Structures are given as structure tokens and as C-alpha cells.
Image (cartoon, rainbow, N blue to C red; front, top):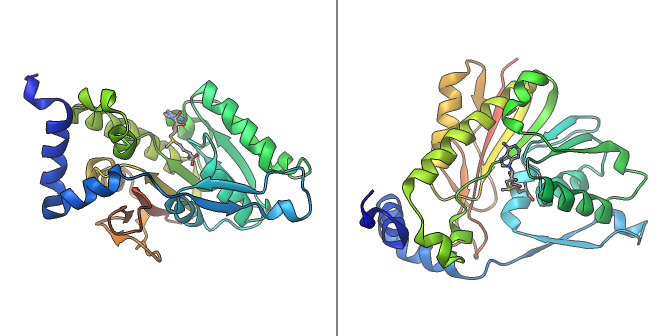
Length: 265
Ligand SMILES: C[S@@+](CC[C@H](N)C(=O)[O-])C[C@H]1O[C@@H](n2cnc3c(N)ncnc32)[C@H](O)[C@@H]1O
């Protein structure tokens, strides 16, 4: 690989090609500190042993709400740590469903368990199981099992990369291509673990279409019973197969991409 195809110049070249005239404004917005949304814990009113507020990106709230969890749904959050989007689901549904919250990283599973302990009252926490598996094999073990699945996938996280000059120096497009392959494997596994009629929400905090619409496109090619829903939200913009919240248009929130996918009955 030539020296030119690495680092910030290559990063800029690739994203300028995707975003055109918009890129300088988007880059500026990505470099600003991300605003935090204060998510209120509904259990705090009755039980002051739990923490009152969890701070996260407002776009994460939007993603988790797309699951539309009903009482007694069985929900799998495939890549859940540290747990922001899991809390949104549990708060929104007043812990009326049942959850498997999973993450591959042992250290991050430790953080996830702590978050659940700190925010969910003990008398509700029996509805939440935390596991530590490679989620890309889930469809083999529990096919057709869940009503709802969230795949908040590992991704390029360009906003975080811009905060870390060391990481950016090593940037190449091939890491995004490798992530695409992992994301497709995870999305197929998540889709396979859904019951017919169930719903999976695929999300990333990447601005690369390769890690977003192009991943969903692969699922559509690989599985005959995929029904991609038309995404709509109060803020953000439509993409080919989903919805994107970019900080230059959304008061600094994002980036976040999501696609809502139903399994045909
Ligand atoms: C974007 S973060 C998840 C953030 C989380 N959903 C939240 O809202 O707080 C992606 C997570 O995927 C996990 N991960 C990466 N590969 C995985 C795999 N094969 N199976 C399960 N988790 C994985 C990482 O450890 C990381 O915690």
C-alpha cells in the first residue's frame, strides 16, 4: 500500500467523494463536541436507589425507539455494551418485556452489568439477562426465537476517530471493508434469530454507506423473507434503505444510521 492511501488525507478523499460540497460542513460538525441528551429514568420516581439520568446521544434514543417493543416481547440486543440503547428500550417499555443483552467484550460486559445494576430496580432486573457471546453465530443456536432484535454494530465511528489523531494516522478504507463483512455476518445472524413477523433494527454510528445501506442491501440479497420498512423520524434524512442523523443538520447529534427490517410471515 502506498503512503498516500493512509491517514487523514485518504480519510478526507474518501468522504469528500461521498458527501461532495457538504463535506467541509460535515467535517466541522463531526469535530465539535457531541451534545448529550439527558434520559430520565422512569423508575427513579418510585425508587431512589437507582440513578436518575443517563446521558447519551439523542440519535441513540431514536434508534432504540424503532424497535416498538410490546409487553412480553422477547428482545435480543446483540452488541449492547455499555448499554445506552438497552436502557432506552427498558425505560420506554417500563421493563414489561424480556431481554437478552449481549456483548463480545468481557470488559464491556462488566460495564453493561454495572449500568443495569445502577439504573434498573432489583425487582425488574430478572427480566434482563446479560451474556458474553460472539453474536455472529446467534442464528445457528436460536433461530426464529426473538420478537425484536437490535444490532448496534461495531463500526468505523468516524467521530471518535477524529478525536484520536493516532488512530486517524492509521486510517485506511480497508478497515471499513473488513467491518462491512463483519456487519453483514452479524445482520444475517440477527435476522435468522427473529420469529416470522419480528423486527430487527440495524444501526451504526458510521457515516460510510458501505457500513450502512450497503450492509442492508447484502441481507436483502441473501434472505428471501426480508421486508425493509420505510424509515421516518422527527429529525435526520432518508437514505436508500434507512435513515441517517448527521451532526451538520441535526444540532450536533449523530452520526447515526438505522434501518428497520421486518421478517415476512
Ligand atoms: C457501537 S458499540 C454498542 C453500543 C451499545 N449498543 C450502546 O448503545 O451502548 C458496538 C459493540 O459491539 C461489540 N461487538 C463487536 N463484535 C461483536 C460480536 N461479534 N458479537 C457481539 N458483540 C460484538 C463491541 O464490543 C461493542 O461493545
